[in-house]
Amino acid sequence: MSDAVVHVALLHSAGAGHLTPCLRLAALLVNRHCRVTLISPHPTVSMAESNLLSRFHSAFPQVSLLPFHLLPLDASTANSDDPFFLGFEAIRRSSHLLPSLLASVSPPISVFLCDVSLISPVLPITETLRIPFYILFPSCARMFSLFSSVPRFISSISELDFVDIPGVSAIPRSSIPPPLLHPDNVFANILKEDSPKLPKTRGILMNSFEAIETNALESLNTGKVVKDMPPVFPIGPIMPCEFEKNETQQTNSSIVKWLNDQSPGSVVYVSFGSRVGMSSEQIREIGNGLLKTRFKFLWVVKGKKVDKDEEDDLEEVLGAELMKRLKSKGLVVKEWVDQSEILSYSSVGGFVSHCGWNSVLEAAWHAVPILGWPQMGDHKVNAEAMELSGMGMWKREWGWAGEKVVKGEEIGDAIDEMMKNEGFKMKAEELKLAARKAVGGGGSTELAIQKVINEWKKMNH
Ligand code: UDP
Image 1: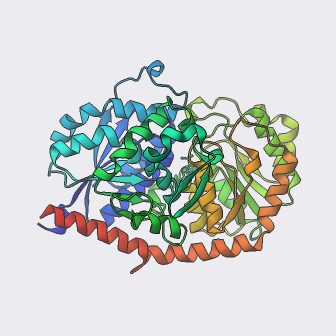
Image 2: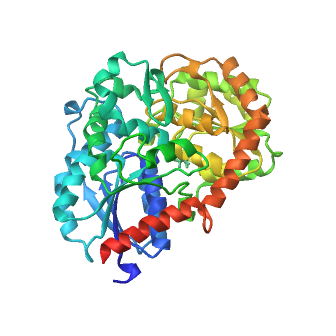
Image 3: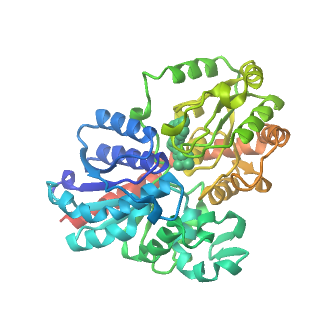
């Protein structure tokens, strides 16, 4: 069979942090002559996801789109108030609809590649259809080590001060994603149900690269973490694509114009990703912190987890007086921005980030040091991986979202500390070069991608 016949079905999950790497991977596979069918759960949780999907489809008409209409989820039967975790659950509970959907696909699917949040319901379907099953893991190798170790530690979790993972430095209890400590939560149930199934998958495509997570990746692939683990392919950083740019968006062009006018390294970019909504009190303290730092800033404010729910305007959240003072020193916006483009500007000298893993990788790609402020889920584990890489720091005492209100004074001091640290800058530059080398010809990422595609080609014969 010819190379072009490798036909990859990609099933994404809820949230921009899961969708974005999946679409970037789809683009990468198309550019390497794979046929791609994107199975797209509908409706999406946020507008950011539906906007991204429509831009992707305009840019890649050759990718077949298979809309996967979800059954309505009765939220009272799922123990979580997080709309994105409920999104995972809605897809899982609709998965019995997949076989009839897949029956319509032609030519036949060679490989099924599925977001990590959907393993248990999809694995048996691919087994029945005899389609090799691979996972896309959008977080870091350190988080994957924790996830794959769940069966080993979950029964004693109430007594553990830290999770000891062979070959990976210990993960303290305070960094474990909080839902895992509440065993009936939807997210905890997904991890507990899916982790033991990992050895039944054919491989894990991991959005990470050797230079940023040397130990964790090596430990996973030498069986130190879990003995019978399938191969982990470090195919990251799966980098931003042209389709993500929203040329018509007014906000981005005014941001870009402003960034162009600032001197190198003088601006701190503040954003907590696509699904962290902060309390008004905390938002105002961030404002105070930004007034205190000696640096200019570009701040993306977000008050609600889901963008569809954002109704207050900026002045309502910040108050007229604070807003006026902020405007004289930096830029404050309250809508989706093109983050990867922003990070590429030399005026951006640091990033206050929740440490969503896509954000960490995008910062590494552009050599931007990070002040981590983890909020929920995998953020602290990612912040640990980021700090271990040397490109930044995070304040453990700030806790999880909602545990306390961090005062502006502390925030301003921490920003100054991160922005002035020459060691972070040097390390971030090294990582940028290493990332670019990894994705170039003969680099570790490129080799991992070729290896997995060759594996698929052989299976196709
Ligand atoms: N993002 C963006 N503009 C925004 C907010 C987020 O482009 O205003 C992108 C960001 O560049 C990243 C993704 O959305 O690619 C967020 O993923 P991440 O893993 O960093 O965090 P999450 O949003 O999943 O918590």
